[in-house]
Length: 297
Image (tube, rainbow, N blue to C red):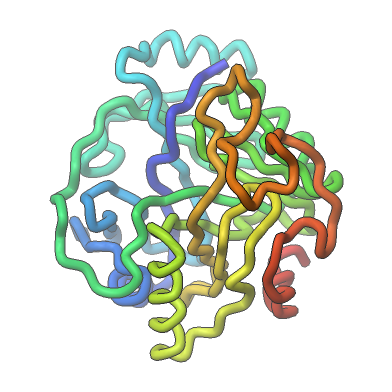
């Protein structure tokens, strides 16, 4: 089993590269750190790579990267993967700012890249738009959430933070409540990608920007139950769901087994559990617009 430390960046293919660069720089507020003919690399304002864009025939999330401990032995990690029947390849030509990466595919075919060395792609660069702090998590539609959860737990050391009934699982690889989610649906694809904001004022500013640019908010602001993050959702020009969130639960001590106490928790202490569908899985906020659920069809 491999122990991951944090999510690094997500790689997307898009039919219209310039349109998505414009979205991620002018609305999202990431910084265009490097640009090639058919690729672009976008970083947060503090210089961490968050998104790679590649020109492709259709939109899709192709790769997720994760950081492992700096003393990790890629040879040993490859042998661990091989025990689980997962074939891997060591690559030295992945992305700017990231050292060699051990690459493979998860059980639904998404590329995974494990890295242990990285550098800033510029620091404190001027940005426009929302300006998130970091890439937070990625959620996927799959036919069997339990099967996906078993792979990520067994092979990559993820732990289950919460379920909603038996159709939505939240998993963590570090203190953050969730880094990957799996929800049951008809077709395997990305459900949404989420970026962390500083606080609720930062989120209010994001809502103001959406109002100025006539970008519909499909859900939110809403205070979720699992993870207790405050969130808003919208779609980018490739019709992908984007979440901005703040105040996500954190489990700072795995041996204690509960999330860092907060006054809004319903359970004291708040431990991993199965939430019930419907209103009980959210603390407050309006229901989502019908378009929000389109990804599950």
